[in-house]
Length: 237
Image (cartoon, one colour):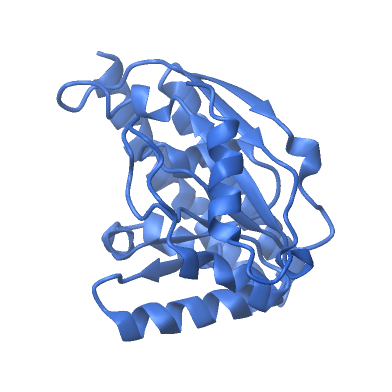
């Protein structure tokens, strides 16, 4: 019953966001960019938070005060579940887009909102397009918009944190923005740990670590491994 109610609520809530999308377009036509960005951020935050809470799950957040508020950042997170995106939208402070897999670009309404949030869709099967996407990511960060990346490349579903793809973190250094490591524990228990498509409540923990400034590191330092170690060390599992 919980799973059925969750699916119904998700569909209805997602369709309801079309009302806010209309307001976003109107604000854009009126040249009210700040109000437009605020509406996008608020709608995305409410949508993400609602999906996690409707699953019956509880979220414990640590380190929110460590996120710089005066500049864009690159959030780097481990990836356990489909619920990671709504979790980060709903509970981690600040506006943010995602560097997401190309498949998400095919989901109606959701893909439109992701584009409005300055998200990018990465086609890992096409090297040329991947490089162009990373160049766009640098421009977005330089433009003052934060991004989230999952450098494992796929969901761990509760397994060990896979090695990080080093190239994906280089955009922070090129854009001169801090890297904010984010550890996610427990989202896979909501869905991926269950047989079939079943939603079950879980206690989800999010730990935000102190920012890392890539340009301050010693030459030859392995930023990807440094961030991965920090995330692994703060996982509560």
